Every structure is written in C-alpha cells, then in structure tokens.
Length: 312
Image (cartoon, one colour):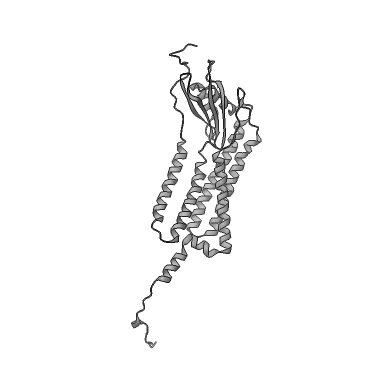
C-alpha cells in the first residue's frame, strides 16, 4: 500500500474527538436557569417560608433534571481497558492505548486514547458514537465507521454490538435501553403531575405521585439490568479483556429513585401524624397566623353602639 507523506490514504486525518453530549448540557442549563429564577423569587419571601420554598424547589428541580438528563448520558454501563493493539488496517504498527466502551440508552460510545496520546506521528484521541435507538440503524453507523477508516479497536468493539453479530448484544441492549428510557419519560410525567398537585395544595396525592415517580425509576433500572441475562462477549485485546460495570448514570438514577421514595413516604407519614406541620411546610400558614396575631386591630367607638331600628 502506497503512502503519501507517511499517511495511509484510506484514513482521513484531523478528526476531532466528541467531548460533550450537548443534549445533556442543554438539559442541565435549562434546569439551572429555572433554579436561578426560582431562587430570585424566593428572595422576596420572608421568614421560614424562604427556607421551605428553597428546599422544595431545589429538590424538585434536581429530581426533574436527573429524570431528563440520564436519557442522553452514555455511562449507564462502562468498561475500560489498557492494552497494546494494532492501530489500523494494512499496518503492523501497534499502539498502547486506553480503550473504553460507554453504554447509554441511545447507543454506545467507543473511546480510544493513546498512552501517551501522541504516537506513530498521530494524535490518538477518539470518541465515536454508534446509535441504536428506534428510527436509527446501528449498522449504518458501523458501515460509516468502516468508510471513514476508524481505528481497529473501535471497529472491533462496534462489530460486537452490530445487529448480525452472534454475540446477541445488539438485541438485548437495544430493547433493555428502550424500555428503560420509556420508564424514565413516564417518571418525568409523574414528576410534573406531582408538582402540579403540590401547587394545588393536594399534598397527599402529590406524595402518591412522587412514589409513582420513584417506582418508574426502579422499573427503568430493572429493565436496563436485564442485559446481564446475556453473557457479555469476550472483547480481548491481546492478553487483556474488556469488562463492564454499572456507570455513574445507573447509580445516580438509583439514588434519585430512593430519594423519591423517602420523600413520598415522609410526606404520607406527616399527613397522617402531623398534618398541620405538612401544611406549614407547603403553604407557610404558620407565618400567616403569626402576622395575624401580631396585627393591631382598631375599633371605631362611634360605631360600637347601633340603635335598634323599628322594622315595619
């Protein structure tokens, strides 16, 4: 194979790695703007009500942000291995690199980062996305990778997840991720309904909807965890094997679901045993009562005695 300035002609150079998931960034920015707006409103509230409102708003926005953001993250399941492997086809050159696979609900990201990052006169720093969500063809992304001439380790992992690979990873991961994502969107809808119920002072039903939100968080985790029913194919690079484990988004979803359970059961218990405290927490009736108690009442003495009138 002929060279041109030491570069294999099939592989275009200067590919920039994908760094940020812009959808997740947009979700986080939107919820941060909402949090800032509500905090500015809360500054105009006096007394204990300010603390109660701040606690409620920040907790609710955190749950909502997690519910939406994890649909777009790529670290529900993660695997990274350091190995020495061939870099490209038609070449005997080998590189030492950290090879990673990051599984999300929409697809997988495969990373390749050289150790060191500059080897064989190239900058080895890739992050390639292969999407399997409905309406997208995973095999088209794989074929596009072949046409672009992606490094061998990335294509090797992507081929393991392709539709016709005997490992069966594609079908199991795609269905599990699809149902997990559907559960998260249902959880988002129930979170919206719970906030509406709380704003209408229907506290007990709002607490029930928080429990529904928590339940769909757990259903999403159970759905995604079914991928463990299929043995993960051996992905070997020389003597090293790539193994996966649950990532940050999985554990964040679990923690948020447990938080929703705690909030829901706490509100239900307060409604049963100390309903007046629950009302104070949501509508600050205690502060209003204090204002009424401290208010001065003026009586017009001239109107205190009203003469009896004869009714004809």
